[in-house]
Image (tube, rainbow, N blue to C red; front, side):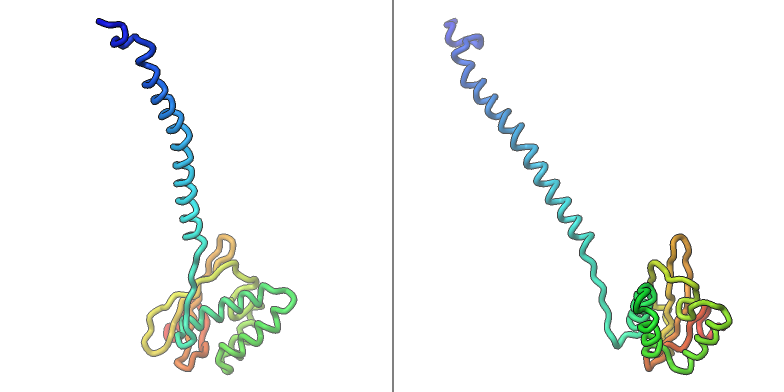
Length: 172
């Protein structure tokens, strides 16, 4: 057997070693870059997805109006400089006038906010349709740190709040 054809010949192994070395280095450099780019793309996509939120509604929908009222009212009550005046105007706009007198009487008796039925402002809120046919009844869930309160808010067909309480207007 010729020494040039054996596997121990250093001349015949050089091209194989160089090819293997180049392929190995290329893989060592390119593979992590590809994985990093892929991870960044995935992380970026999930971050964008989590950051994009949609809130929708329409003024003709009573549940949307209740949610709008509570959102704006809580925002107003959270503003120490201008909140009281805005909260008063929001009450006049969203709450039926004769019922507003009942809210004010409730406040005098309970020394608390009649719309929130609490002495302080919640950290978050949700509004859920409660499925009434003759008028709108919604469950407003108010959340403080560790405490949750549920209120039933009834709205007339003319889109004015006609009742706020722990039970619905027909279930007193």
